[in-house]
Image (cartoon, rainbow, N blue to C red; front, side, top):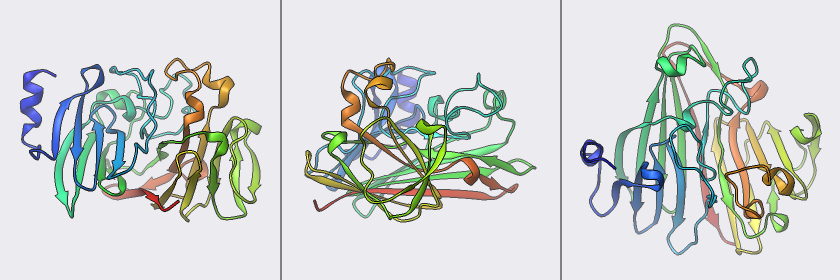
Length: 301
């Protein structure tokens, strides 16, 4: 990290608790250490790459082959998908999952709150974003590191016309063996299955990962829990203002084609993604805001 960059962010640091340091590839990150838990978030994409509650192992998956450089997304952790999800419908050349996950964000604030630390980062529309999307916006990601991992994505329409967008907190959770996980969700969830030409299905019972899985669950408001008998823990994900949950694992064949995923790493990850996508895209009037929140917890096994 260059000296000017260090000086620029020194004002936000909390000595012994939250520091701005040079991370992988020389990319700056905020490293948080508290009695309740620790974590890391990069300015590159406002991307959370680590969260460990006190006395627990790492909860997030991060690929050993992730490419740490400008213009490339980090594989693992919690990428932010915005303002579209997957490919852009009217432009196949546009970056997948939008442009903010490969953009350099800025630190807004770092604060302590009841034993946890809240790191806020922001990015705004500029000439580069308008090449892909003409909207005027301000996007803030507030992340709370402590006994829970809290994430809040706040979109403000700073323009003069209404804007519509998709969004997702593309969380990769670390599991012992994805084939042995049991994901608890309410019965009768409907979902679109990308691996089955987006056919609509009904979920009955637990979600089991037995092949490539790429599903958008619809009208999801209740918590979802991932039971991991290998690591002997249960991860609970709750959310607000999110009407979709994406469940994703590439499985062996697709994983083999991914240059930033090491061999067999697909068995160690399961994505549970609070989102608003497809027909659940969000519309925000000029001067208005939308906030999507998600909280991850490790609960009794």
